[in-house]
Length: 445
Image (cartoon, rainbow, N blue to C red; front, side):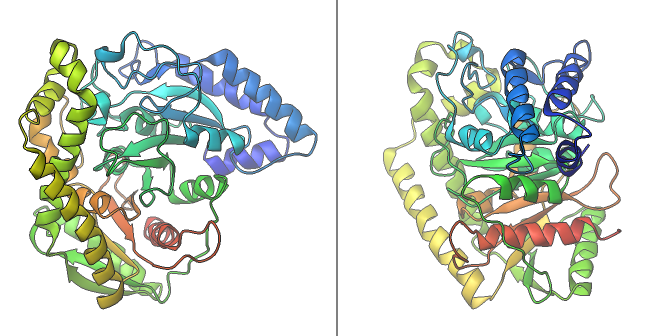
């Protein structure tokens, strides 16, 4: 069931929150003994059922507050949930005590009536795009367990793709909501930097960390986004938008199927009254260069004491990434942060004003998936490089499956650029990205 199906059933009395949560918990139990048994990192069934009973009473009394009220959500295990440990997929935090309070984004979801049912698998400390690296083992693709799920928000993507929860929280520093969404055939939404709070999220890079949403389709993502307290979702018509199709360098895909998927999406947008123009992003190289310096330096700062005292507790791939940052000169980090700040201003300003663009479109990743025995280091480029620029720029971006792709679809990435405030609580660039993605996703309807 989609989020809208569940919300409709709850509001019409066909389903109670308790019935819904009991079914979700049973579905989580059913993962035991399957290739997906490590997807759930922690859960508190009693707390979830207590919240469901409270939602039952509220809704029965006529106090329904929105589409997340009484609905199950999953939370990536680098985000604090009160009463559950935050282990970040690592043996380093095996002895982590339960969190004493919710992360701010979790509090907001609870204010909207959502019920946390599980914390989910992630690529260790969110420092990788494959989902292969975790103390409990890799995350299996939701439809083919011999393949990777993508990461780092691997478990959240898998639970949504398998239809167990309608919405899940992830984080996205370089690609970590969009890439697993692309590989798993769902929608992953990274709002603009700071649009969703990161307090209570274990940091990878505070300069680039974002919180994001994963759901079955764009409409469900939009419903969840609009239900978060303080967010005003704007209705944005596609007609009249000016959308840039990225070209040149990494934005030209060697696989003709990827090019065809973007072609089809662009034709759909033109048919709906949008103007689609080819554009270049000459700053791509700079954006890709500053990302590992900033992210690596900030990650090493967070982990330095643990890593220097007990490096063996990290998975080898994570340890190698951290070790590579140990001797980086401070001036390189400072220079990279300054460059990132400059690019955020100059590039977004140019795209919005000089190019007059409301959005960009390209593919999310360079591959559909890869075997579980792949080398994580070899996959970093194909899974990261098309997403990193928009994390550095801090603009909203989401991945939506190209129509007709089946269980191994091509992810299409839509980037929102529309400027202005649009009124209290509104986010015009996010609304534009969601509108374009919805149009692309429903092209065959």
